[in-house]
Length: 386
Length: 230
Image (cartoon, rainbow over all chains, first blue to last red):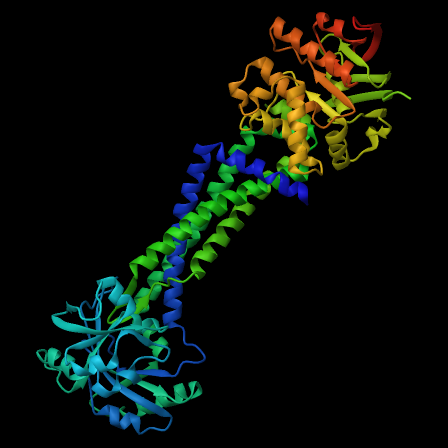
């Protein structure tokens, strides 16, 4: 065991003192891992935003057969009728206004809620880290801004910012675990309705967010809501919030799923790069390995040295690529927004850690065959080959 | 009992359908502390014998015992372990690892031994001192002359204090003056440290440092003479 550790510095010297080959390999691996981790972060964000989870209790009531906030128009009084249904804890009518209805990395989504319902509208687990609800209630043009949106736009409490022709005063910054809320500007419902009245939508809202008492009641309450308005002028389509996001952002989901192929391609590139680097290095060092065997290095010990070399190249490249992607996502606060729905690109450690582990594993895998071949080679044939 | 005992030692290779026997039915005893020169024309079996003594090749028939170890019976892994403690090998073309410094090259065989870093350092320093190359310990092989490289290779061969030192034409790639100083170094190691040396050579002048000269022809020992040092 100690032998295995004692030879590791020699392997590192071989890597460091072949700087051009090592640098080219590590750069190639890190670029591929940057791509892999970025795509994985995107996929993770989509998964978090669209997969219904066991503890979810929020329903979204939307106009049936409408998928854009500009076309979903529901009368605000529907909220009173929904609230009377059994199993419903609260109903928050929302007017949604977006700066851009297309898929984009920088869309501002305004959600209008009644003055006394901001606390209910903000998902549990959220807290206002700067500013206050009271400050929001005092001003008609006030907005509580999600942390990701605030960071992306560089706004703080007391600032004003404009989007989609609406100018708001920042009264608070919201920090929350709920990805949908991190990219939202929460404003007063009448203020947003007034802003949108120019389009003739006064008294209408885009959607209702309905909180039910038990996750198990989610489907039953959704069916009851849709049954309630089936024969109205504005029939509804009610879904769990994450399913609603998944359905509305289906194009993004498909796009991101396709991008998953790129991630696999990146992994294949890492494997090929390391395998190529190791095979070339082994060919160059055939005489060195014969010398090592003559000195008493056994076949398995030499195979171990090759594996350590592959693993080190993979690990260094993986670390650089993963940290680069992590920093990009963290600093950029990117979210994919489509028709007013935000899918935040995950900025946690999970995707980078998966990337680093994958690079390490691929490094070892790529070195296995050259290592085994070298371990089986006898000294005389190594000397004859050079 | 001799340090090295060969009995009916035979090595046969297959090249296609043809069988080649570079070493045939050799009986040989080498005493501890001897300095033996192996001579003979190309293809006479000198290097094959050296490789068998070093445990980097295996006999097809016969027995080989070094310091009481039946080398011909050892499995591949055991043979590697045995080499690491019993054999020091000096190549004609030095064969230093190019990306390692002189110090690191000499340290390599000690990585296989259970010893602390400070102990390793002391052993490497002593080996470099013994071959008078301490001042070049931080140099890479490309920064050394041929003679200096061969000194480092000798330091690498003696650092584990092996039972036998095997040298395959150690002066074959050196100019005359450097070759002489290299032979003096080997003779000094033989005389002062009692190292048993078996050296393959084509150069008759180098035999004056050996105490025994063995002549091989067609895989057989044809003459055993007294060297210049005897």
